[in-house]
Image 1 (cartoon, one colour):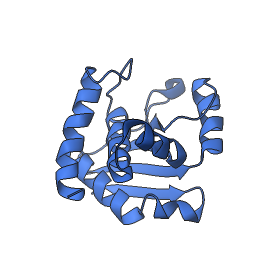
Image 2 (image 1 turned 180 degrees about the vertical axis):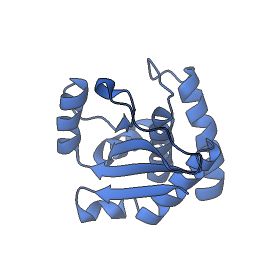
Image 3 (image 1 turned 90 degrees about the vertical axis):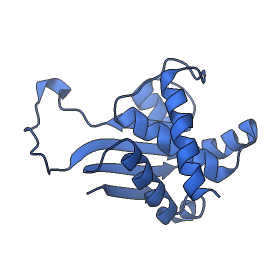
Amino acid sequence: MIELDISYENPGMENRAPQDFVQAVLGKILALVEKYACEVSCTFVSDATMSGMNSTYRGKEGSTDILSFVQTDDSDGFQFPQMEEQETEVLGDIVICLDAMEHNCIEFQVPPREELVRLLVHGVLHLIGWDHATNDLTEPMLKKQEELLKIVMEEYLR
C-alpha cells in the first residue's frame, strides 16, 4: 500500500498543486518505479521557506525548486529493524517550492502541470537512490526523469 502525506505551507497553495492531482501522480510514479508498499511525504512551500531550507540543508543561498530528503537507516550508526516483506518502506520527504516551479515554467516555457509532474518525478527518483551531478539532460537520472514524465503526462495531462 502506498501512503502519501501531502501538505501545504498555506492553504492557498493547494490551488496551484491540487492534492488529488498530486496524490494520483505520485501513486503513478511510485508504481512505475515498482514501489508498491511505501510512504512518501510531499510539502509545498514558498520561496522564503525554501531559501531557509536550502541554506540549512545544502549550505546554498537562495531558493530552489525541489529538495528531497531520503529516509536512511545508517544515520549516526542507528539501524532500523529489518522490514518484513509486507511492511511499508519509508522513502522520505519531497519539498517543492511553488514559486520556483512557476519560474521554471516561464524559463523553460512549459505548462505548470507538466513542471509539477517533472518535479514530482525528480523527487521520487532521488528518494529511491538516483542522483545527478549537473542539470544536463544527458545525465542518466534526468534521462529517466524525462522518460517517466512522458509516461505520466500521457495519462494525466491529455
